[in-house]
Length: 84
Image (cartoon, rainbow, N blue to C red):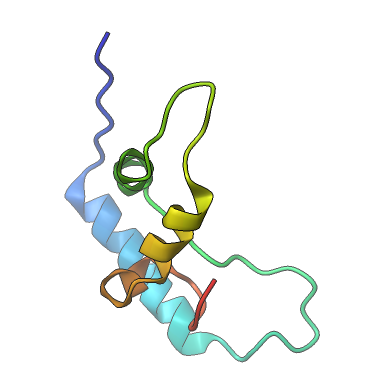
């Protein structure tokens, strides 16, 4: 069985643009108990999980997942500046 995850490119670009706007508007963690650190379109999330060795029933390497998210080339995936 083959499963494909696809999303329109306009939707993906819209999410990435919104993430950059949230980073620019971020005022800090002061007084906030919870915050949203990332916003990933499902197609990109599936690609990253595949890179991290996703196996059904076993999960994936979360440390490697965070490394990919924190990579400078992937800054558009985060809603807050800095490392996660």
